[in-house]
Image 1 (cartoon, rainbow, N blue to C red):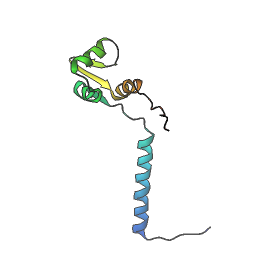
Image 2: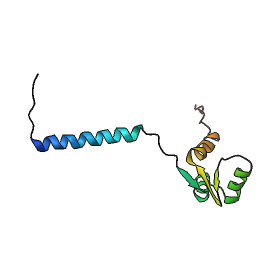
Image 3: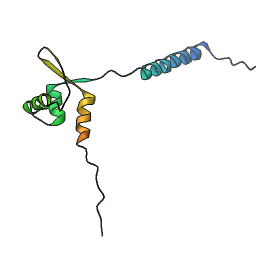
Image 4: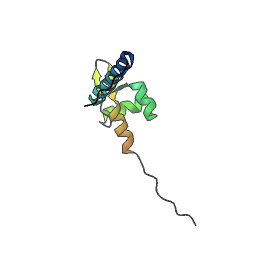
Length: 95
């Protein structure tokens, strides 16, 4: 077995980098926290008025959570709503 000798400072730097890599792996493996949006943020994302957003809630078009008077929406639900209307481009014929 071969032995490698390195200065103490280099060894400490190596340990610091290994700790950073380990922390990154641990953080990346944890499930991400769901981001929640308020009415104003959703209105801006969907380019709709607050009244239209209320219609979406009333008609079950967009899921939401309400605590008292505060209403919030999951970012993933808003993105899913946007993706429902997604139209893929179609090929045009050129001469």
